[in-house]
Length: 295
Image 1 (tube, rainbow, N blue to C red):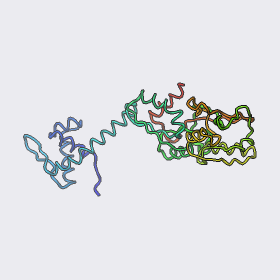
Image 2 (cartoon, rainbow, N blue to C red):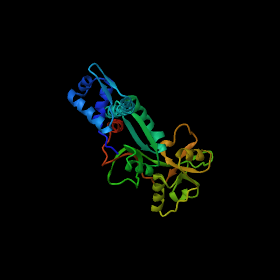
Image 3 (cartoon, rainbow, N blue to C red):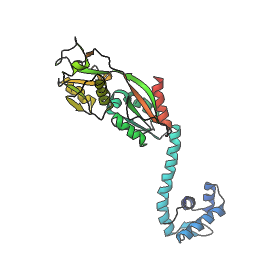
Image 4 (cartoon, rainbow, N blue to C red):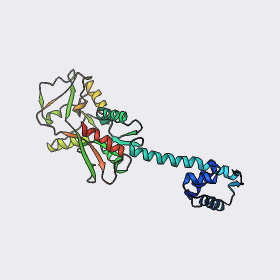
């Protein structure tokens, strides 16, 4: 396989599109003799004449026309790539890649994404949904610039930087129509008498709650385990059990849902931005993170 010399094909492209050795030399900022020598070298490598030269004008041979049809899109592609890199550094283009869970996206990230898009409409935003532990895999594999995740998260390593952007409290939420328990206070042990609905074992929430119950020497066996907080709320809303969810999910559009009172306090958790130390942040990622620092 022949080695590709980009400079030779670049010279060919400028001569072929201008049909002038002198014009190509001006566009490339090199001497006309250097242009002629590059074309001769390329013709020798390909063992084909690419141009018909005369004193009045330059024309492409049929072989030269074939080569131009292949070279022109390649040159344009390289130029677009260069332009996108330059635009990314000025936030006139480029890409913002975020990993986050569905819950964090829906209930927390959307206003910030909207604000960023308004400020930088030419930056392409790509959001990848994963569980909070799964988001760490995205970061380690270089598939995202940063992740927004619940914390504590046992998958986060010492090579990650953590920036807290919000603290929240988990609650046990019930529908008062089916569970009229608003006047009671519950211990963790007493909660086990009721059907508990919670996220599955792939989540940081499950890890957090199981660890909490083990600290109290209690064995937590959920009635239902799902991958969606919204679905947990839907099932709790129709009376299938008591859902363990972040407090910010209890919104006004579910007026019958309320948080149970607890005898023991639940530790607060955090939503954090996690970046990878070995990977420098793109200008778009740095600018997006600034929005949280402004609030």
